[in-house]
Image (cartoon, rainbow, N blue to C red; front, top):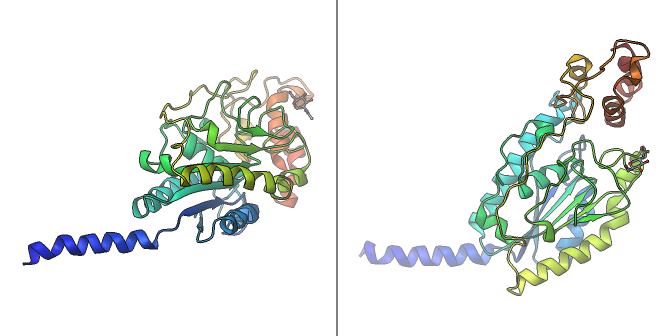
Length: 316
Ligand SMILES: *[C@@H]1O[C@H](CO)[C@@H](O)[C@H](O)[C@H]1NC(C)=O
């Protein structure tokens, strides 16, 4: 008797679970140093939920640190590594409970980087992530309709999904020639004045994307989600090709150590290139690539450390 009843209970159980599943579920990931939650990705997450009644959302639970004491001294690189693992765990676990739900990713700054790494694969040598595999399961990859990156430090010029005025690389760039297998499902917003996803010097630009591009991002997401809800298109490219793994050591850097270790923010710990290649003063000009990388990222540091950064650099 029990043997006959068991399948019925399983069937009812499955039906119940499916009824609890939303049509759309949004994952949001915040930027460095903001408190747990969606951070600046929040307004975009909410606008997507409002566009699809019944849609649910969850924040990626990861440190979002950049080496600050107030963040437990967790380095930027370590935070990204933990973030990529958290994305995979949360997305895979949601997808196994609700395999029919259409998924959307919205990441801001470091939050964009962890979604970029987890959805596109290819590894992240800037942060010591050597595996080039996509850690999101094949089943879940197929249910991701759209991914929005705002101020993603992995930005490089020329990708099909770039939106904005930036024509340079972020501080943790993809290697030249990188292709994401899900390019068609992505929009990555980055403007030239941004110091993190681009080579500018206006931190306000970096914080402004939800306002500047929120409406066009929502339109993109609605089109992609509606197409998947109505049974069209799978998860974009459909192949599981992973990206190339060319290292991103800048020209002129020949493996020094030196002051890069002082600097736990914005990829500094993951910096594997040289620091200064000449002992002849003024050394600050000795390796312009390193110096500009470091100064661009110093803006991430808490106030006093930021002010000290140019002096550390001169004396290193
Ligand atoms: C940023 O990079 C672009 C493209 O290489 C270049 O044209 C521009 O001058 C750079 N801007 C700054 C502020 O370095």
